[in-house]
Length: 181
Image (cartoon, rainbow, N blue to C red; front, side):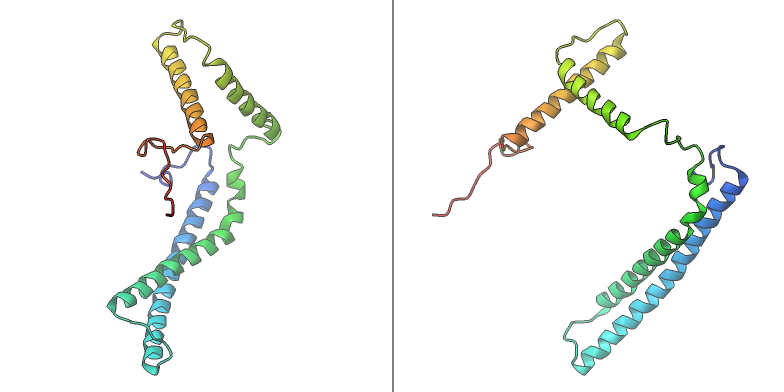
């Protein structure tokens, strides 16, 4: 089932109504846009046929081009109307976006970035030297092995890229260059 049928408990009844209203607006306008797009595609194809008869356009037009222009126009119209409605209705969703959000001061970008960089450096430096411990059971051993495998893959990939070899072994890691004779 979709999340729309079972919204989270953190949302109030008004928030749920607002979400349903925005969804309904987007779907309604998408269907209207599809109708306009279908009609526009039909009109454009008919105009192209007239232009061909008058000698202005030199293109082959048949049932396939008619289907393409009609269905393509419908799809484009649906996309255009739905996107425009979504952009117009997003202001109604701003209060809902704030429900359950982490306050800005609690998680700073710099501390997050620093933590990621330290984890990367520590992963590459220390994990290859450490022996997996069995103190935590099989789960700890599997976790350590996964980390070692990930570091080994990353190292292998970087070596392949920096040495100019291929990423797959389909050519044995050697590039074949055609030479002009």
